[in-house]
Image 1 (cartoon, rainbow over the protein chains, first blue to last red):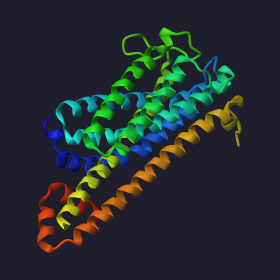
Image 2: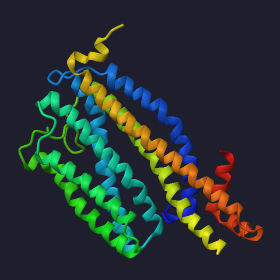
Image 3: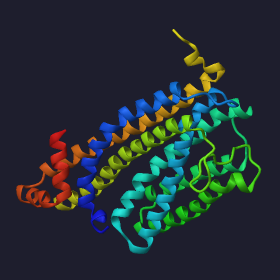
Image 4: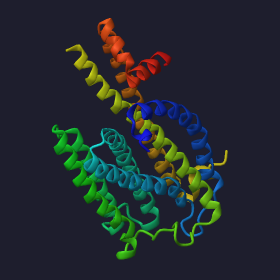
Length: 237
Length: 75
């Protein structure tokens, strides 16, 4: 565990992993797209619009997992002041925000043919929009708060409040009457999605998580080089 | 050519728009991140080579700095 928190070890491994993930990514995306757009069957109620699920669901999962991870690392950093952890959440936040936007936009594009509206102020949709504002506030708090201690405190506060919103997003379809359908895939209950649709969904989840890994590693290297550049400036003085 | 693949019983506009939007956003994020990474690597190498020989040796002793210099020379 200690080894994985060592910046030089992580930086070295990140370069190797980046090359492996980049090689796997493109074939994986192509296979996922072929299954999602052409080989999977249409839904008996929603018709072909169900294909939007293959990007909407992974995008929503990524934005939720990213924020949960950010909260975990923020709390870890707040308690133990680990420099490497700062790099991790700074690298994760823009990715989470991007997929949050993708989830909201694709959800809207799914909503029009399914519900007859682009947007409704229902609990699930609104809480996903709120998550977007949490992401923006989080990014602002590490970009524009110059005092490191204050920045860590602000980041931790926002991430903890955002974590409460994650719980609201998860249970919004159970607590309130919403336009959004309840979860079809669950770890504890039997999944209601047919196997023929689970294959493309699984492939797209895997492909998009691989993409996230590539961007995360690149961003991690960017943040590390930024710190090292400051170090070089000190050498110049 | 089978246009039904694109029309998708009238849902094509929504389905293709969703996939196109996601693809463009992902491509933009990838290219922007890659450009920033290359730019920073280049700047780091340039600044490192501006140092005196002794200081450059000291920098090269650091594992991360060494790794950046190697990965930049490879690319």
